[in-house]
Every structure is written in C-alpha cells, then in structure tokens.
Image 1 (cartoon, one colour):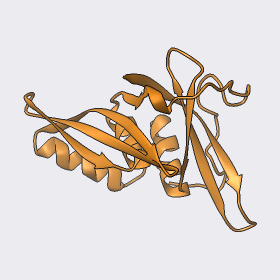
Image 2: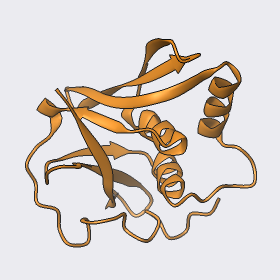
Image 3: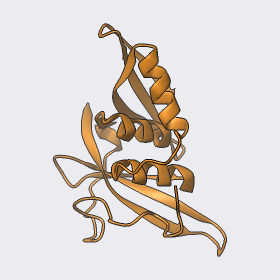
Length: 154
C-alpha cells in the first residue's frame, strides 16, 4: 500500500575531507515513519533549491525533462518509491498523457523526487519501506532552512 511522504530534511555525511554524501529524509505525512536515501550532492542541491522555488538562470536537466513532457502533452501524476534491494532504492514515475493513459517510467528515487518537486506532484512510498524513527528537532517540521552545502550556488 502506498503512503504519501514529504521531504523532511537533508543531512550531509562527510566521508573524507574532500567527499560528502547527502541523505534525504522522507517522512510519511500522517506519521513519524521515514525513509532515508543517500543521494549525490548535485541532486541534493536540485531538490533543495526546488523546494525553495529558487530557479537558476537557465533550465537544468530536470527542468528540461518537464518541459519536454509538457510539450508532448504529458504530465507527472505522482512518484512512488517502490522497493529497496541490496541497499538500492527503486522508484516509478507515473505519467498521464492527454488526460487519458497512465504510463510508468522506472527511475532512480533521487531523479524521481527532483521531478516531483519541480512539477509539484505528490510523492509516495510503499508502506514496507517506511520505518519508525523519531526525527531530531533539527530534522523535523519544514525543511532545514539552509542548503545541504553552504558553498552551493545556482
């Protein structure tokens, strides 16, 4: 069963003095259960700035994808994080063409989430992926009010 989720926080994991990874924490809208997905810095930046409705001077890859879909008469209905196998998450993007046919596209969750945020469509996760977790105060509520890395610029 699918449960609607929201972006709760971004966390930075410093691997070395030169390398970081980012965790996006997705929380079920009706409970404290979460999913934590490791994403790269580029997508963390895109997702974060999209949630803040900050736009760059030129369209980025995800903007381009949405523009192409719109010109083809399709729109993103929803995104669903469907599975996790061997620590790899899977997602589907549900597209509607001309208000009729729904089709699904396999995607990395990070790309699917970026497209969902940019197109303002809901994000869901299969219930089996949600786990009980109490978010720390700095993770709860709305998004952390700073980008995942202070040096990022668009």
